[in-house]
Length: 517
Image 1 (tube, rainbow, N blue to C red):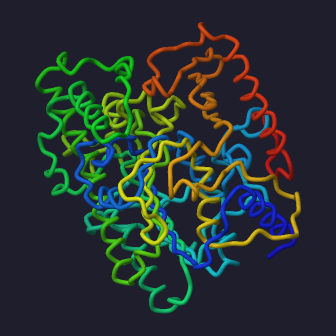
Image 2 (image 1 turned 180 degrees about the vertical axis):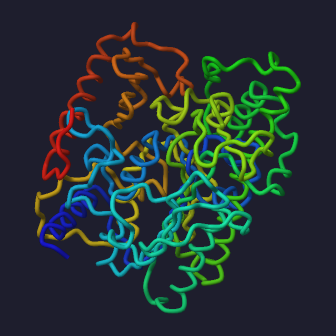
Image 3 (image 1 turned 90 degrees about the vertical axis):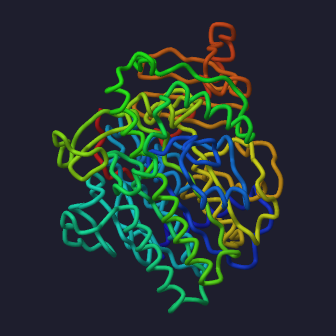
């Protein structure tokens, strides 16, 4: 390990350890399941219509967080998840005047990925699925990796790698399906671990590409949901909200229908049929992911490691309202969900998937940044089926996993790297408590937000005025209070700008990318 990396590790671990309880002595395995573009309320245990018995079981036997946040987009969320820093701090999202496109950003040397921290603690690390980070997996600390680059073809990807080496393109009609393949590689790595490294703990990162567009699923999976969404998005949004209230997920009003989306009753019978078929494919994708997660859990059980494994599940952003066609296009007359189709959820159904919250992926209103978050750890969590209402963020995952991994704070601390803004959530596993953050910050694609306690300022698009919401009473962001409390808005804006200035300065250190306007 390089001198700089050792210094960064010391600083990072010190920043985590300074806030938390004594470390676990026994090494615990960690499995992190990440969905791609799944809505806040899609899972059954969060009020959705999709049949998700495996994730529902994890929730019944573990914890559900009701105010867990991501960054509103895939690549910044992945950077935050695996480093513990905001994406702008590590040059993985747009920084005005410094970095025009976060997908081109190269992380500083003081910001390695989580497996680099875990390796000195005795862990082996495995990755399967989407990457969307700079560099390659093995070069960033993973011991095995199946990396799916082509996310436009769920049945026949052209670009995928194993252990950082390119594999041949998958032939059409070969029986391949991305969600199953990702789970299969994850299971293979677990079996290899049981055979050759059973004396060591493991970290497995399973990054599904579903239900990201294009909406594609096996025909038999789609058939399971035939007719399920015929009632339309308006009635189904109301039904979801009612279930969420009964489950205790939240208690608020329903956000307004996204502008431009018609009332379901305004559609013709033919239009309703086309739209229903689209949501059936989305549901089938989530359903298949749940079943594949069940297979991974079964492997943990077969290894007798389930009780000693901390399992996390979340999504990288809210459901997507994007409208586009790429990959192999959308052939005329193609069956919805087939390899010849290319469909997106679009605003109408994204509105349902993110119910009852406002807007969707890319936006930093609640619908874009809120995710279901499930934690299951039989040996570490006594509570069963409880809710946690503390505000938390994907930057908290690396500190949480490091505490679970059982490190001890080093005595030789260097300030080569800034302390992580992420905070361990381990103390919340035993009982609900106050949020571990003074504030939470967002900036993506010109959209910006800050949350301090129950108050949130948010703006959609560069130059848009700040809106102000009392999230405790108005999670759906329906009642803008900015004109009533201009001083509060001013104070919160000052905090948001201070963070932006801090992150911009930090991102310019040792920057190998030429500055761009």
